[in-house]
Image 1 (cartoon, one colour):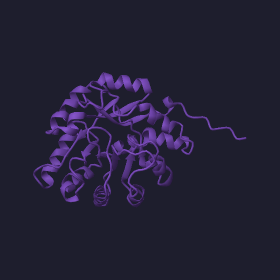
Image 2: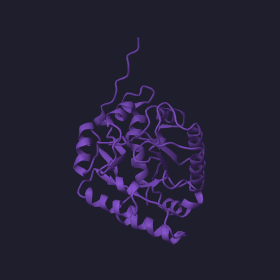
Image 3: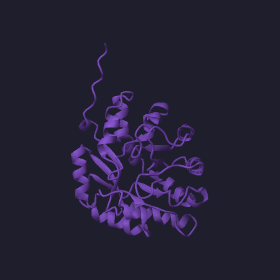
Image 4: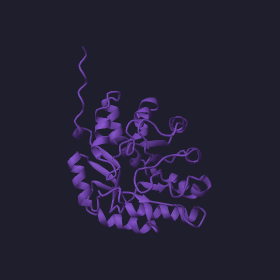
Length: 268
């Protein structure tokens, strides 16, 4: 009888959480919150998470988004394990100039990752064209946020068509589907779309099993670790990857953080 393979120690995998929400979540369904950088770090220490991408809750939901984005920088100042993410939307003024200025401002502030609120502003290629072109010029990883208040989001046929069109129009722009909730599966066109594009990824922050299908059928390089904290208990997603028998140790290391570190390292 063949012995079961030894599972890697989580501390040896150096998890890099790609989705943590900072700020008070004023919603009755979510009494938990991570209102401060210290609260985020305490959560990370408890679960042996090495680093995290952090975005501000109100920047996702309350315009002008710049207020929440700037507040985030102050909140995590002096905490090198926390990496800021700005929530961006298409500038009201069309054209390359306004979009380029927005991205340059973000990069000048030390931000290397963006979240695009696709549930609020749908993935209409013509609407996102200028901003995506500016982001693609610098290879900025973009999390396509389909959540509403929490990680509870889904994809419609229109969403899939829009993401595919954006991905094909900007092949140098890394796109990560995020805040898409699913148990055993989500929209049936997601895996075919990821197969047919070289730049679409998925994070596991609201997924229990579906990420395994992407990792096994397309490749582990297209999957990013995420807890979705505080909306989801981090232990669930840590254990799902750590104890996945169909995923080898090197693939787990890629999913836990190497994929995200590679994408951030390509920003110019």
